Length: 443
View 1 (cartoon, rainbow, N blue to C red):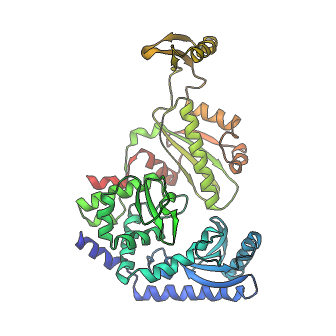
View 2 (cartoon, rainbow, N blue to C red):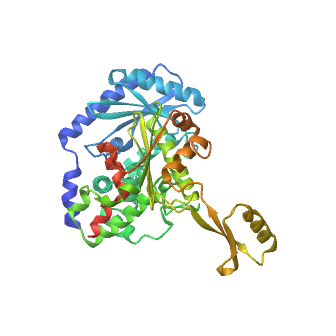
View 3 (cartoon, rainbow, N blue to C red):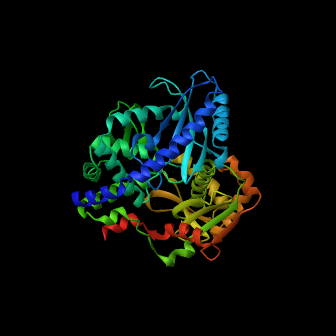
């Protein structure tokens, strides 16, 4: 494994030319923002943050984060409005736009480098008023704690996570953030030690120090806030992939772990895919992703209640106007009748209630095995398409985010299979009927 890590290490360190170029862009952006903040007495300072400030960035996707520090007595309304105005005024030549986390922030691109102008409150450690308030402390802590060798180990870890599709804190990905990568390397000392440790990790194991209990697959404590579990933002699917590829890399070290592996598609399952497509009014990617993910979860639950078995599901948006909700079903057609188990006949009150209710509506009622009363019911829908159309027409208030209800009222399309899908959407849908690329390392 040491040889593999050594080879990768040489490829992930940005060249002196790239470092100089990135620093030039960062300083330019910083000066532009600095000119604007002097107009506002509410602001106490300005500083770099994120991977650029900590020296853990990868040359292909290094964002530059600039944090505007507000005095702690500034209202939330002013905090948001002033920071947006500064962001737009300072980066007006570079087509700025708003992004959202807990609070809005401004983003733009200078020579293909993303510049994020992010507001935070200038508070003491632990006295957080916004989610971004920890970031300056993260920067100071990591600049002090990470050695030069560790910074490069972080780059190796980020490359490993990116190659296996589990890097990125955005809600669309729910993967490992850059900061978690730094925390993990700091905790275990090196990439190799991390791989060996994660290979043996136990359920709910705590990485770091805390007195608080957390109920997530693994727990990663923020070094500057012992009450914060960084792993809470990572999906179980991505944690599972991480554990599995760590085990596989430990068993069979190879450079292939640092290259993207395409999933293996099973084409025979295309007709098991149920697809809901609709258009939405333009909004922040962070907002629309949150809404369509919640809607996909709601509709998966409703399909299950209607008798359809949802094997996998996912959401997708082009981040312009089209949204897709994708469901891989055991079958898109189901039987008209099904059996419903009632209470045991010894439970007098509930038995009486179950029989009285179901004698009116059920096809048949009988005493079954296990002492339970069984009724034979008739389904309202045997087709997943007809069920979904009716549900979206008549039940939008059942678990669908308010922000999406008006979009769906304007129209939607429900289809089966891949015939009406564009190439890019086909690739997204294909993930549901594929062997995950990260698991192919076990071949």
